[in-house]
Image (cartoon, rainbow, N blue to C red; front, top):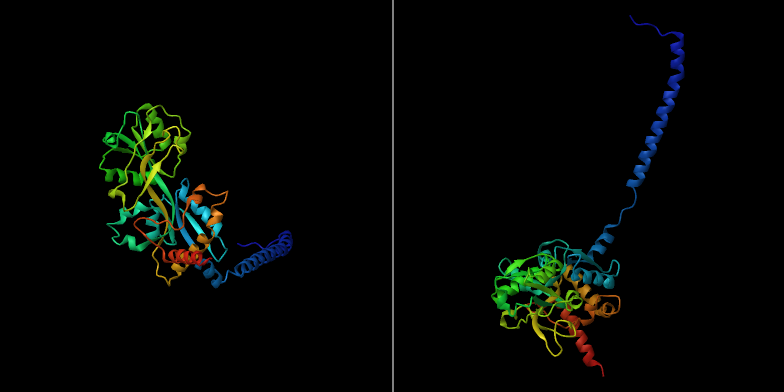
Length: 346
């Protein structure tokens, strides 16, 4: 049987009901205010579509390589010099290494250009038979000289057959180009891929016969390191086996005074490191992006050769060629125009 509320209960209800209504009203006002704020946030003006298109139209993706490598450093310096807001934005991209950059250029979205070692083309001859017509070069950035550094008991390349030879860590130029070069030389070695600093210590102990560096000379490890008599660089002669991708080079006493005697030179080969692009159709937007990069980069190369940038820029010759590749059309046109202008001067 239901009971009728007493007077005290009725009095309590009379007090609580208005309070509950006030609280509910406050909550509703707070929620309404939140919804208004949310609505205001939603109604913020978004970037105009044409502005987004304009920015993307002149952004050039550049596959640079590993963070610790020279190519990504050069890519970052190029980006600083050619930057022109929405008119040109060079975007360096960290990758698995210079040897993987060609793969990025061929297959990765947003990559218009790449820094590669010229002999990376060798790997694509089977899977991409027309690779040399699909890739063009803008600039021969710098040569990476082959350094084959050996213990005293090693006197020739043939002595390394079956011996332990280190090619640095995977993703580096030495790890890719080194075994390829030894294959062309016809010398089968016991290949290791550990950091060179570790391998050099193993060489001192007699646990490693040689290390193979492929990088721009001089190499600090050989300039500053102290080596016992007999540690040396082995010569590699440039011949028809290397004409497709490589260049002749030498190691000199001025570069390695503690390892090469005055008056002597060590013959070797160099792997060109090149700035390349996909062979885009001339009327395409992708071609126009790279063409604008050429114009900015070539006309501002003197800025990169000034103090504060990598010294490698000082030895770069815009007209230098890259074995096995043809030059990007806009780059060749820029060089031709420059040559005609120079000839027209009195």
